[in-house]
Length: 468
Image (cartoon, rainbow, N blue to C red; front, side, top):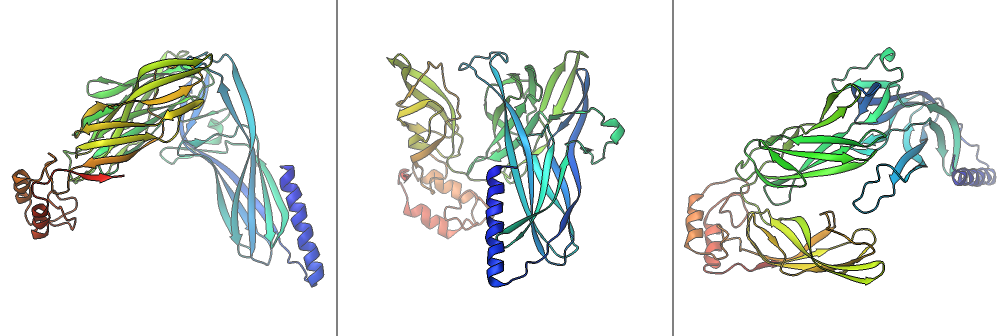
């Protein structure tokens, strides 16, 4: 246990005892047990290399606690284990194949609090890996149960455990113990999540690919296209028979993110299924290919009207200057796409923070016009300084739109002026009701005289609705 934690506990217990003596209070008796610890790893079993591997998506312990005293007690369940990780000192954009690899170990402490009535039992779940975050503890895990009374903390019970007690298949079946002997546990290598880009019908799919092995490997990734969508953007992938395909080289425990953006404007008011991504890893020993699938996901319902959304596509170097031996300055233009249904003008994009070892000296760029679905380069450049030469930047820099101008709400066909074309558009939906209705200028889920009045009020007015 950490010495500072033990020191604080002794101090608090001493203060509580002295206060009890001063106030002539008899301390309440507390007791409790760790009844059992069950370590659960849901996943799938694969024959790989020269052994049997268990690829798990989640790792947790179910700790059963019992209150043996006659008093209601608040317990603090403390979990201690070492987290090991590997980092490789790489030159920018250059793989060393594991040369220069360093291994580290840090202590992790997790705490869960629970209040139990006399003689009550309950299970506390302690998570080690969930939703792609965390890791599988490789060494012993130590649990300590303490009871709390005011400032005082009393150690009641402790237990050590090794991960790998219970293996559960995707179908919910527990693997017999005789089949888990010398089973190697690894992180499940592919996971997906999809999110609708706010106020648009564009959806961004993120596919997280991890190398679960302790050696470099090359993997193939295929994302089947959903039905009735239009591809807006795919990062680093190629189109093969309508699917997006990547070939990725990964160092040990390295994770990469693949991005796809689809537009669903032709599927108004409906949900849709995102097919699972398929990850292929070659087993050189058995000369076979293992396939891993991510979960199937659902698109959100597409909306009939949507507003602005800008997708950052990349950076292009315009000028390079060497200021000192280890200081370089670059001017870069930004490539972006308006994936919203409305055109935008006078867009000002600002970068909030720079990559590591980089300073932004001019952090904004301007786009004079961005029509709906159009991909354009910024009119001007932003400037950064860094301690190394670069060939380009990825799209991971944090950024925001700090100013834009867009059409008026009454400009129903987004041509920057309210005129007879918009009146015809309004008539097509006259007296119809529903969410996100085209023509619902005054957003009350109905196209009626109020919307007609709004259109008349902005007749012949050009788009100038802005935000700062």
